Image (cartoon, rainbow, N blue to C red):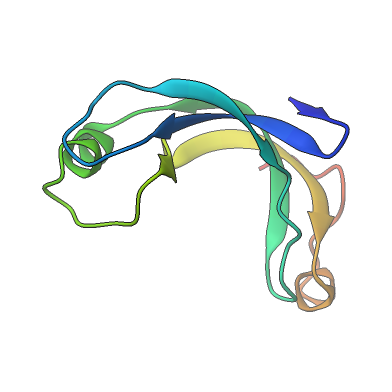
Length: 90
């Protein structure tokens, strides 16, 4: 959910800590070749458990999940040239 420039996000705070915290983060501004997606549904998979347990190295804290569906709400200029459209379901 996006409210006043902020979005809800499920995050892992530290490697090895598999608990998820729901927090509010600023909505990111997409770079020229990125699209911003308002996530409607997401899931966690085996890769996520490996990340949260520290098996895969990454920067923490991090937003949980990488498999989701949603709607394009913003994009950079290069993404627009590639044919992405606001409102497109992905």
